[in-house]
Length: 90
Image (cartoon, rainbow, N blue to C red):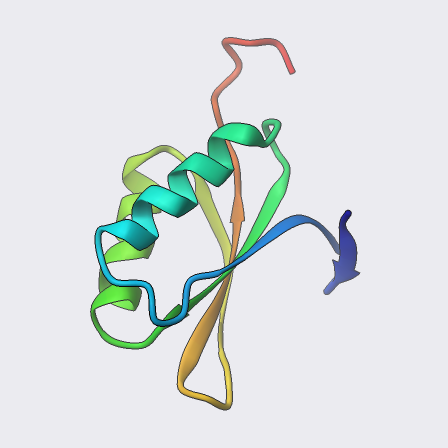
């Protein structure tokens, strides 16, 4: 399902534009739970509250934000790497 961008393998994508907090966080968290450790999720979010809250929530969940890109429509594209620690051995 993935495609390459910036030498990174994107494993899944979520368009969360026009999705209000905290529903956008819930959708992102559920998607990350379905993914394997070190896989990359591309997320597009609106500027404003979602862009203020989601990056912080991603870090609090223990994942890594690899890049943040401003898009022409005033939204943002985040590349998030799932990081579940080493406990499951993957």
